[in-house]
Length: 107
Length: 122
Image (cartoon, rainbow over all chains, first blue to last red; front, side):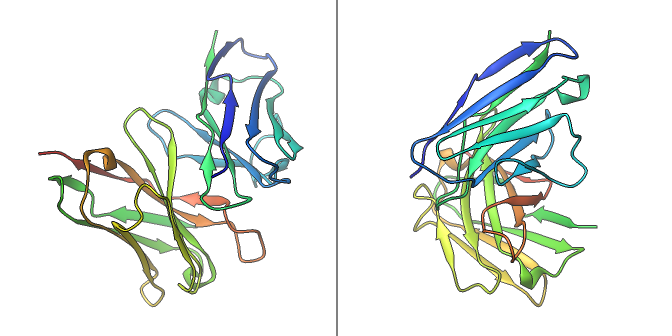
């Protein structure tokens, strides 16, 4: 199975800050990496697919990059509504696997 | 709009069975691969199983292989998860999720249901 290592596990930042989360795959997965947002008590929501493509309706302050084994998720200007846990997920191979999640809080 | 509605969760004793359903609307069910994903209380996301759009291809996580069975009825636009020999560690919210599309590589969980809680406890 492909292991996904996400860091940090949590972070605290101020409104307007740039926030970066990294995700590393245990083997190369090309661009087959998704990012999801899960707000407390809510359903996960797809934000980014194919490592860098924003899903429809996702604000442009969210972005993703990377390929192979190393990926980055960025919020360019943190907003209060971005408080959530973010997960990366690979789909290069089955079983699909998720990173452990990054909890983002407002400082 | 796309809707996925899970049902069938509840409290069940270890070793017993439960069947989850996921009724969908707002898209042509028979064109999309469908997944089950679970989330134990306070934990992260764990993918469970997938079935291709036509039911011909399916795959399970090792943690449920031999105990869980995914199926679909395209005439009813409904996905199922038969869960047998349940264990305490199967306690979780179970989500059904729709794949992004037949033109896309399988494995992007584009739309999710609201989830149904399964609690395995004596």
